[in-house]
Structure formats: C-alpha cells, structure tokens
Image (cartoon, rainbow, N blue to C red; front, side, top):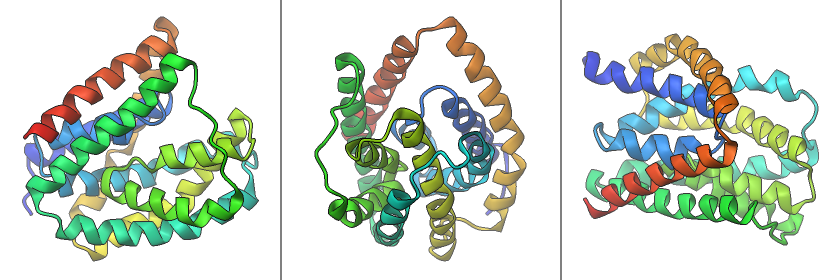
Length: 246
C-alpha cells in the first residue's frame, strides 16, 4: 500500500476529530466521523485507521477518570465485547464494499436518531436491564463496534441501566475501551484491515488529537452543548442517508 496524501488525509483528520469529539460529543466517532470519511475513502481502510487512533488516544483520557469506574460492571461487559469484535471483524472482512457502506449508512441513521431523540427529550431513556444481560449486550456492542465504531451507545445504555451516575458511566466506558480497543486493533491486524504502515502513521498523528481536544474545549465555550450536538447529528443523518442511498 503506497502512502500519499490520499491515505494520509483521513489519518490526520481522524486523529484531530477523535480528539475533538472526546472533549465535545463523546459518540461522534461512529455516528459522524465514520460515515463522512467513508463517502470518500474505502470503508475498511477508514475502519482500520479509526481503530488505531481510538486505541492510541484511550490512555490520554483514562487518568482523568482514574478509579471512578465500576470495575464489576466493566468486567461483566469486556468478555462479550471481545466475542462481538471477532464476530464483527469476520463480517467486516466478508461483506462486499458497497453493501458495507450501506451498513455504515444505516447504522449512522439509527444511532443518530437515537441520540437526537435523547437530545430533544433531555437525555436517553434509562433501560431496565439486569446484569445477566451483560454478556449478550457486550456481544452486540462488540459487533457494532467492529462494524461501525458505535459500540459506545450500547455501553452507555447498559451502564445507565445499572444506576451509575454520569462520571461513573463515562469512566466505565473509557475503562472498557482500554481493554477492548487493543483486541479490536489486533483483530483488524490479523484480518488485514490494519498493517504496519497504517499503525505507525496513526500513532504519529496522535498529537493532532491533542490539538483537536484543545480546540473542542474552546468551541464548547462559545456554543451550547445541545446546539452543538444537534448540529453534528444532522450532519451524521445526511451522511448516513447518502451512504444508504448509494
């Protein structure tokens, strides 16, 4: 694979936008970034790039929420996520490119719709889910994560259902990613979605994530969180619809 501006562009953009979203709109990666990048670049390449960027930036946010997570629930979700990542990677490798782009488009519409509903109604509904459902939800979340990088929605709904307060929910999601994102990168590597060139280029682009995070914090000082989120969700809806309709 020859690396030129065509391939370096989404790597740099992904690093910047992932950092930006981590200080603004926590679920923007799968809902907005993936469907927009897939409009111009091959879907599997985009998925591989974002997997490495997400993994390499996890350790930046972890110290901010150190020991604020609910370890029991994180341990409950991780095994299912690992299984789901393997399932999702298998599907990712075998789905034709055109069909996979439509999968991403449909996922963007579904998740953007759910998130927008939460913004309009003042928050996502708290589901009634027992801990026994953790493994099944983990498999669903891992599969979704491998296919569209949108597993965070499943995680947030599960942790909210267990009565965790906001900080504990965010901390538990981050702690879960610290365990499962390396599995995703390895799974993608074995499947040929990530290679050494992509890995090195993504890690080298991490400083752009810091820049994106810094700019994101300043953007939020000028815009209301709700208006900002709804604007991004509208963009995600348009991108998802464009992918779905081909």
